[in-house]
Length: 252
Image (cartoon, rainbow, N blue to C red; front, top):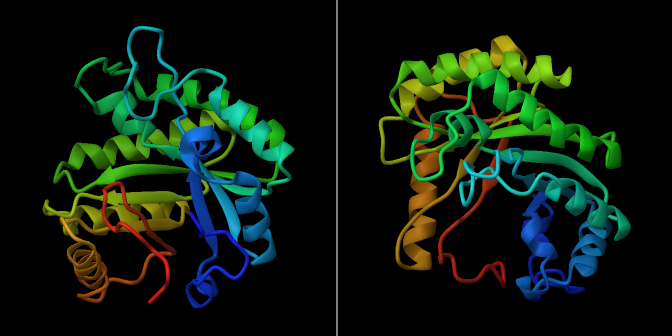
């Protein structure tokens, strides 16, 4: 609330932000967000809009209430509503289709093959590209399992996605599991992405019961990532799924 009002007190921060990402949930009436105001504010401040999508649908039995899955036409409907509001979406980010479609073994897991999830994701990709033909589609996946088979799966996934959509993911975003030994896996991922020609994005997030704890942990995470001679990611995201930080305004 207040983030997209004229003169909102984050002008210095906004000058450093290239893109602002939302999910389709902002279109719900109970989201508390004036979507048209958001679209206008971002355009006026030359900040690109990115939309997160769930690229899988399941078979009506598996995939229910599993991350990365929603109704077959939902991303298309969201894209059409944003288009009707005059929004220009530069990128779409797929919500962890490889992990939740192929690896996840919890309740309602589908455990489909990698080619199968690529074909399924390609359906929604084609639909949203019909609305936003110039938008790029990238992938978001967890990293830090300490399991070499995950990197093998990723390489197969990139190939399967290109076969199904005629394009590689426009980016790969690493949702690093910071409480695990992620360093070796990230360095191997960087080498894989360099071979594939896919830019690397990294989420710098925190945790904790207070805003100060969350921010302090996020700082520790990006300092840890960028130390030891490791180059900065192509794109950095600041993102939270928790109650903290409870507010982001004013920017001080």
